[in-house]
Picture 1 (cartoon, rainbow, N blue to C red):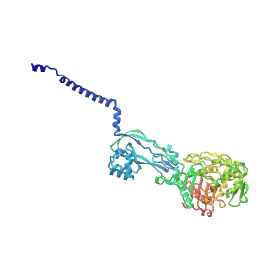
Picture 2 (cartoon, rainbow, N blue to C red):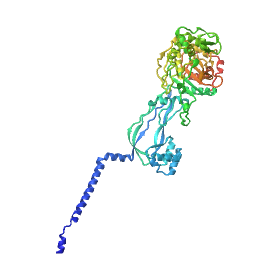
Picture 3 (cartoon, one colour):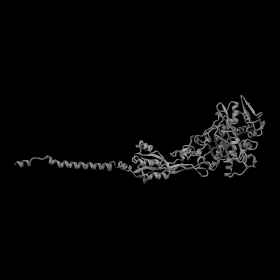
Picture 4 (cartoon, rainbow, N blue to C red):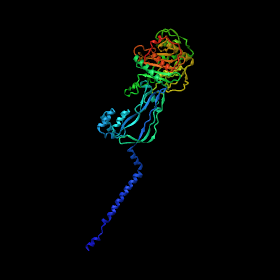
Length: 575
């Protein structure tokens, strides 16, 4: 009975144990099922992206910058593919100290400084270690097999003409963005648009397979300049030799095509080589022919004479009394080198008489010369588009006082750049039509703007031929077999309290050949030391050397009789 009683007693724990176990299995299975649904359905895209991010990467495809060429197709700026080294700092720090030191040695970095920089940037995934290295060095870096270190393809800019065209072409920075010169002026045109692709990378960050192209790169557009690289070399060598010979502070030269206004050569001293970034000196960057304005002095007299001829009050053989070589204007005086006596207008140009030019200007209606200078472009930018171009200075209203009218007649109280001065002379070369200047090659000659009567322009050009005669101020600008028209300028530079008697700018502007002009060339030598310092002795020989090369390269036939060799002997120039 006792056993029966015990067997018949209820046992609830034993009964619910299987139920509880079953519930546990069902709950666990439900959780697994829910997790599977969550992973495979609800969060599928997110998790796929996260997984892909562990080995898929979107990589930029660099686009090369457009090539810059001269008018004949010769390269002045080209882009070459190079590699840059980058790293994931947190991954690279896992490498041994010796390997990091070896990497630093290859990249010419300080090992301790490299480690410190990596520790400071551990929160980043991409840090450049060295930009634009050679392919050989890049392969050596890859062979180290460092974690988190990889190469990225980029482009580096090279300048075949080097310092010869440095200030004209300019240069780009490490990100291939134009910083100076044509590179800056046409940056948007030259710069390409990078593409993108999706790739698989290994644990070291190296690309092992391309998956798809996301966006194709768009290379930059090519640019064809008006410059002739051969003439650029000739002009550069002549200018550099003269600046050194005369110990000048600086110099500039602009050569224009007289029929189209194209810039055929534009050089400066001192210069710089854009390929050697370690030696870049900021003061040498600027293109002085475009950015530096100066008083043009006697090189402005042809426009004074053109205004006089256009007024009808003077003719080429009208007489002007310059006796006794000094002109008193109120409390000031105007001087000539010597007393030329009674001379005609043509001789005023030939002898570069300040007194003659001042008397002619004072005899004209007030504002006549001022308006002529405004018409030929003084006081405003040439519109070349070159970065930092100066507009020079010309008063906004005609000069009121007689002395200001007198000094304006021979180039004081007004300032211009070498490019402005050369452009103004295109009006004399083109029978009174002022041409726009262009740094790009043009196919059709522009019509230009009529600013001087054709008759007056031809008369002034004929007078300027006497300047390079044996009786003129620049016989060293003469070229055997060619008629040359030109004008000298020797300008005292402004100083505290007036003008210096020891600092000068020597100028020469010329047109060749005078019968059918093809070239206009302006030369400025800033502050030659010692003697000579006159434009006819310092700047004129540079003009002759450059124009001789231009006439030869362009096969321009002679248009005049051979001048006496004796006139040229003292002006011979060795590049």
